Figure 1 (tube, protein in one colour):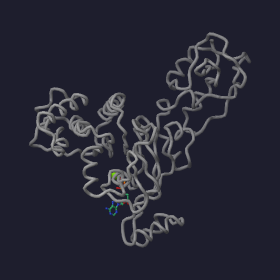
Figure 2 (cartoon, rainbow, N blue to C red):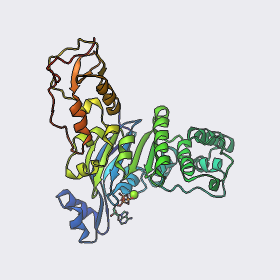
Figure 3 (cartoon, rainbow, N blue to C red):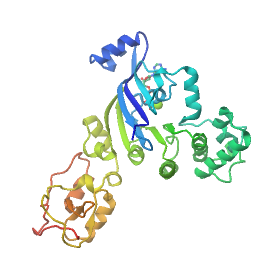
Figure 4 (cartoon, rainbow, N blue to C red):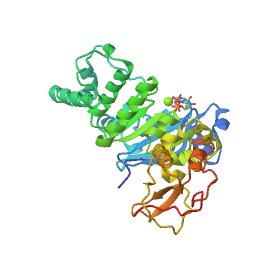
Length: 362
Ligand SMILES: Nc1ncnc2c1ncn2[C@@H]1O[C@H](COP(=O)(O)OP(=O)(O)OP(=O)(O)O)[C@@H](O)[C@H]1O
Ligand SMILES: [Mg+2]
């Protein structure tokens, strides 16, 4: 399966002589050195690929370069160096006209504060992208209504934007992006202005929609919990550079450096970790031969705790053929809830307290 979206060695420099700045960055200069000359290196050597149907999250503090990176992905901002390929087509080589066409049909953006037209109905707001494309009224209204229904706004089509709550308005923004049938959704802090409960609701809704729509999504956030809930993969940015790309578990369990580790301190680990990440794999040669309750590598941490509470011995983790792939002693669960990144020292024998063999049912 080919990647839907690929960025290779992307740079964006604002200021004088950007080409020269890129050369210096390639030679190892950092953002601060360039800033002294009045040049801003917003994005430095960013490479990643996003598989079709995946949510790729870009996470980083304010000013780390997230929005600049996103704007290069749909050609709103021209890279100083590097390339962006979407469906195998190099965006950096396209004419302005071809880029506009691509943006109106295949790529949609959802912003933090979605600006709705106050004097247009919710339906007309959702249909806006289709109107720009020149889709006839009847068809665009039908597609807008469908997208609004997907976003939980059925029945609100004829309302005015100011009759909707902030969360509902943001949903209209999402519906507008979905109505165009764009394959690629670029979402810049789309849920950040919402209060926590509504924000969570929107995250759930996006994940639910994604099960059927399978869009390719790049989602920007400065919130690591949000990143971990939504992202199939997450890129962490710092001062213009991507410092780590990986799954939520990679970032939590194997942070690339102290900077990434410092972010993970506030993450609710129990929502991210699975048995595969916390198990002790030093169980070579053991067979699965009893019929006690077991976990699989993708069993969630919460479920793993529940299983552990029902057993007097460590939980056996089994693979597709019921073969033993790891064990999780109870102490290990507790260790992973602390804020130490990485696996805690096993504080129990993988064979269990009394030395009995931990096995799984056939
Ligand atoms: N048009 C521009 N001209 C000059 N500098 C810019 C421009 N756009 C962005 N920058 C600079 O590039 C850097 C990255 O900005 P960017 O907006 O991409 O950050 P961000 O990660 O999206 O931040 P935030 O979380 O606050 O939205 C910042 O230092 C910013 O000042
Ligand atoms: Mg931004």
